[in-house]
Length: 360
Image 1 (cartoon, rainbow, N blue to C red):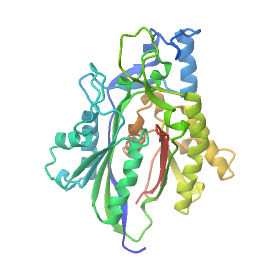
Image 2: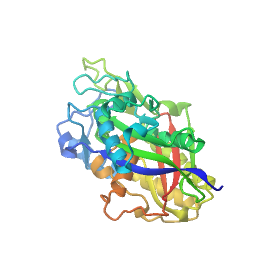
Image 3: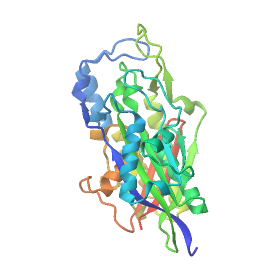
Image 4: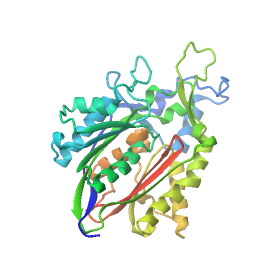
């Protein structure tokens, strides 16, 4: 359709905490099973197996005086500056997260006011018509914010949106749960602007789904594994095997659905930027996606990975990955004009989404 509104990414930014936490930093942890019983393997063996499965060697933790909203604001400011957009011209600020601001000394969720309002204040945006709100949607929260922004921009309701994913997962994980080694902190942000064009560029399509029967509690908040812990805090726990099978079964089909909506084939895709919680799982998802198109082997360079050094940063994963590639900070990975990329995530809910984007 001629002169249609197109949703174009004009700026990206990210905040990667400087504090590195290696796998060796967990050697003195006391890992327990869900029933409180000790592991029958040494920490060295447990950590080695963990690294083999997840691909995670290190991760980043936020400094004790840094909150999720602080990281979000820094990532957002970088994205706005990258876009060259006057902060006061911004129409929407959407912040995807799951736990709000969690202080290092008091690990309690704080979501009032919303993180988006906090970000707007930190960025000193006075325009009351800049609407700021949060989007708790599990790990796919940032991607869902991109989908919502697309509706605003294509309808003519807005000309620009800032979508941020931020999280301090290190503060809500059970220290006695070996899965705590997966989680990390960070923030990623993206500016989208509306542009008129008769070319098929920008966001071409999207797909999403929620499975909330037994799947709703594959990720959940529960008391600590340690039965003797004098602690009323709830921590995030998960059914790792069920999550793995759920993602492997459903993510490839949903990505294929989003490509079909855009009338594209898998051969048209340059990069797949997917949420990263387990390297083997993501590689299996990519191979299964390829098989849906009759491909027996998909090159690994189609799917850039940051999990080995950034861990699982939840909603920050995909926007941070996109920012690093566009800034030339991912070796052997580039995104150029005319490239088709897939942005996809899966997480608590259980929610999955996929966005197909073509660079101008």
